[in-house]
Image 1: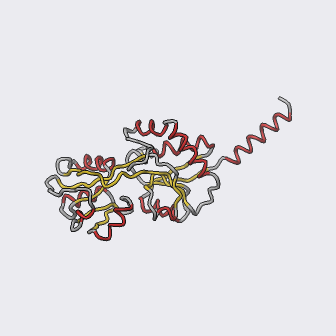
Image 2: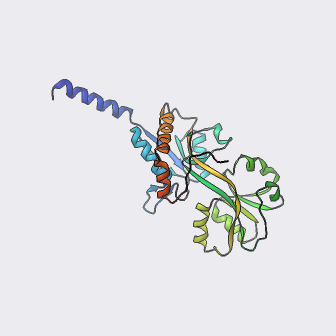
Image 3: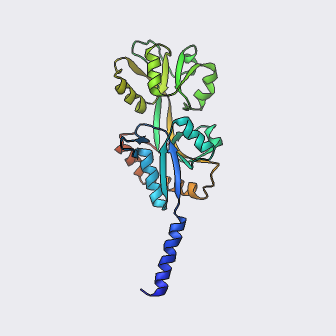
Length: 253
């Protein structure tokens, strides 16, 4: 190899090394989507996808888990680049740029005590007068969120606390997605004491979000393009199936 060729390869190496960046993503503990193992390893569907896309784009993506409200605030104030798995809402779009497509979906349903005779027909008006527990910071769809001022809402920090309030009759029902609720039900050994009622309130979709306060250049567009490519070629569906999750990229009515 002559000197010119060596210099060219060296310059290309330096260029690639200069272009490679580290992006800081945050999220909250969300079963199967984003979790930390006992060994401290960040794992889950969202972590897997983010890391694959980062590698394909030639960048490093570091992920940390925080309480939901803190992680959201970090995006809002520009202390982090990306958020793994948030639901989309008008309020969040004020400070977060969402990917065009979602990478997982969550049916959101109500849970009641086993002996409850409450009949949920899907109409929000039937919730009036009920004591309803909601996890602080969660979105339950624009229609439900707009109707909330008419309801008797108790904001709770986490699902564990919601189930305890339900069993002690401090609330009559609360909303969650089965993916997270089932783990808590098994953890508390209360499967015979509570039940999920249908229809779902909404089927939420989870995205990647990026801080509007960060100067991310073309990274968002590149990340979005790679995510869409993985959806089209079936990678995202296969990765969901590996976690026993249902996924459809088609719009839902």
